[in-house]
Amino acid sequence: MTCVLWPVAYNQTWKRSLPLIRLLIIFLPIGGTWNLWISKVFPVQQYGGLALSYSRNVHWAALSLFQSIYILTALAFTVICTTVTLYKMLVLPERLKAAEKSLCFTSIFISITFLLVAATQILWVTCCDSDWLFAIQFLAFDTFTVGSAVIVITINKQLRTSISPWNTSNRTKSVLVSVAPG
Image 1 (cartoon, rainbow, N blue to C red):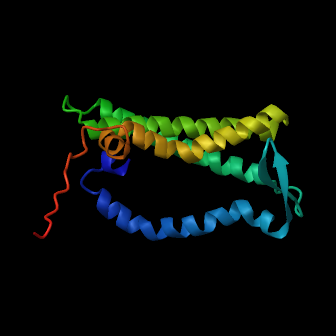
Image 2: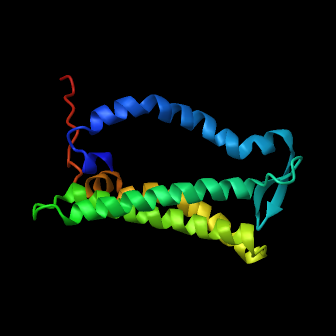
Image 3: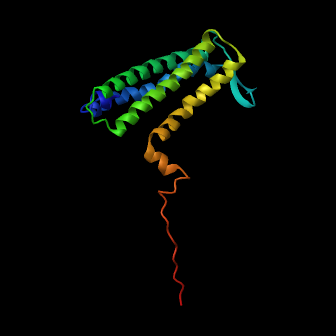
């Protein structure tokens, strides 16, 4: 988003804020997982798969509560960034490039995956403790985890054609010629 808002100064902005961002990347996960480190963790079979569960030592510190706080913060940040990006894209001149369109669509789809995870997490924490929501939550987190890669491959035609095995137009037709000593 910074390259859209401040196309000239975004490099300097990132150089200044990168040390703080690195510290946040290191220490923020501790805020959501510290209770796991001091609790007993055990495997649970769910729907043909394997999940890890835990018995909390600190009862008020539920992992789903911390996940909800982090996910809602990230969701708010992503929605704000997507809105600003869309606005900036709309006020651009007619020369809307393909890269700018890809950035816009990617931001929208990533916001949707954040929204899906946030909605299932909020339902899980607040009201609905059921088997179907438990299963849907796995799908939401899988969409959140794998969705970004799928979105990038779907949006970027050059990447999509370079990795697709059924694309025969990019393959070179070569013949191996060997000279036998004679």
